[in-house]
Image (cartoon, rainbow, N blue to C red; front, top):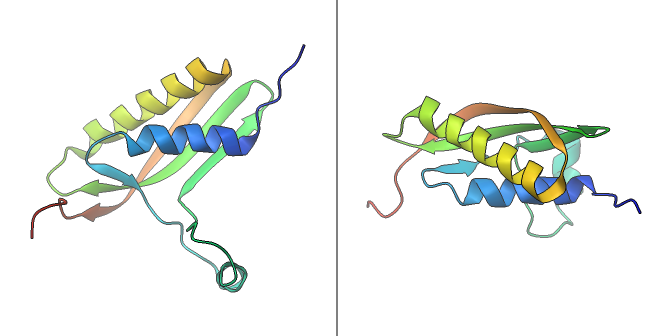
Length: 113
């Protein structure tokens, strides 16, 4: 018996994992003009800077993050890499070849006015 795991499920696993890490958020993807026009009739889902590619049993995750000001960028990026890799492998049985993290921005801490 073979089970196929869609790319959207892999993306959801990565997104949910990253949502659980304090001090980071997945950045919004930059939109090209054609994508802006297609999005206008679309729903509330804003494209995220999160891409999952799969080659057989190997998965690569590329993610752009916004990090809260004052956090150690290397530390939270490493935490994100480990968590995504562990969760994808644990939940799917696939091998995570790489989790490439790019810090795209810095955000102000939430709750501080």
